Length: 620
Image 1: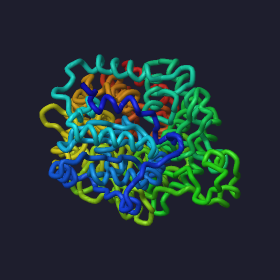
Image 2: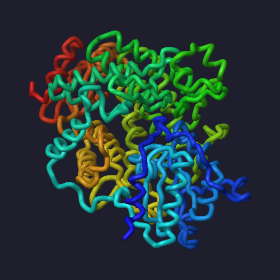
Image 3: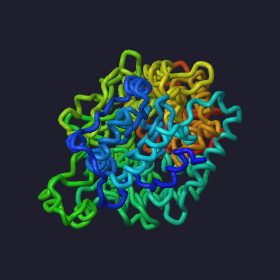
């Protein structure tokens, strides 16, 4: 009996992620028809139509998922999908679908475990039969297509058991603290003590993981994780481009010495935030020096003139000579030398989820430096994002007009569907801005967003669905992405502290429970930083700092400034109206945990000690 196609084929696949790894160069090409030599692949958007066509015509579905700044995606697009033999086979036996995983985060998150590009094969009924990781050159891709075609013809095409799971049927019943320990144990196992950082051979800046390590060290008095966080940040510093600044997307090897010279705004945000927090924690000037190198690059290359952050920069310059690759371009050339061969292309799409991360990072940098210019960058970008907040409170993921002039591999999709992925990060960024500016507009926008999230919420079991797209649910089932749910839960929880609203905090806890069953978390591997961060917030509690007094009074301003300068990663800082606390007849500050509040504080010099006291969840 022949093995099912999905099992036989998996043995032939090699690793190749968006990090730029490739199969060997092509040496031979199978013969093709004269018509195929001039044909192209007809790519469809992810809608019900191509799946219906596949069922109607008895064809398989081939789905190409990637992102614009991905080197390996570009190789596959330019070399493999233009090869006549590949075009001929896909045209005869497949309906081809292309998805930008950043513009369609509901699809991108679902298949991100296969790295970019991910190639997903489905049978005519829409069931996954194979998932291929990374770039495949024609001589290695064509045999895979041929085996699929033969298996389909012979009726031996088997459903692949590794297909992403949909919604767990019931929420995890274990207590919050027990669930936290499980998640933390997973993320601990993913830390590489010898090479520093989370993951295997390839290491990349991971903002939530780093934030969790720093919060855990601070809130629980764990010096091990402070040491590991700082060691990992030293590695991030090694990713900085010495000419243009900014961190490269990743490195390979125990010494982080094989740089992958793509740059992405999410990586810049992770490094920027990490360096800023490390400076606040240690007072060491080296961390600010690294942060300024990242900021220098972002301002020069990824900051839109209208506000907002572009997504990424590719590695290949447009006019590189044959004897030079991207690694040599970045390693050997100065600014003039690089520009002689051209600047690698920028993806000018401005995605809400990535912008939220960058906004939060610039707030961190502002708090570390008290330089108003950094806050101005964050406010301008957030103002651009506010234009995407609909009347329902939810944020659109992108604005197609931002990238109309780019020569994109995959066009940006239209439509009015909502995605969960940008909502949590954007809500957290709004609360960050409210914390440092005391401007009610940011809190108002956050409250509208929290109400809008009800449209994505599971009223029975809690948690939030990846999208409100009903047709998508019919195709592949509804899914609650763990990391997006965790970000949404952390946002709703923090907003509940600001609003003194226990129902919001309960929604947040239910949301975490909805994605904490083993079958939901097991496939996530090391990518559980946001989930761990949410659990840390909810189990250690926020440190609420309420400032009472006329905001124009210099005494009030001095109290607020002292509270703002104190490093506390769980800090909820806001102005309080009269009524909740006794009127002291003068500007004062109250510091509170879930159990108790301080006496009224009117001396700015004593505020740091009170915050430290309540950060440890101790009554005065």
